[in-house]
Image (tube, one colour):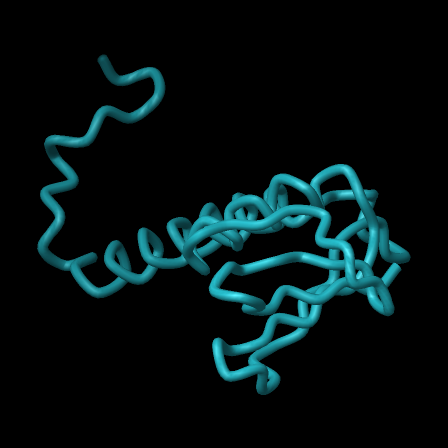
Length: 111
C-alpha cells in the first residue's frame, strides 16, 4: 500500500494514495510523524513524506520485506540505536585502550 503524509488545510494528514479521506490528522508534523510510526507498526507499505509546501521530502518503507523477519519501523529504529551505541562503545574503548587501568577490571574467576 502507498501512503502520503502532507499538509492540507492547515493540518498534517496521512492518506492512502488516491484517497481524499485522511486516515488521521495532526496539528504539527512532529505529531503526525509519531502517529505515522504507530500506524505503520501494524501495516505494510511505503510512505511519501511531503514538506509543508507539498514538495517531496522522503520515502519510508514499513512492514515485512524479504529477509527483514517482519520487523516494523520501530523495531529497526531500536536495532539502529543499539548498533550505534555498540559501535561507539567499541570506538571509545579502542581509542583509550592504553589508558584503561586493566588492574582494576573484574575478570571472570578473579574476584
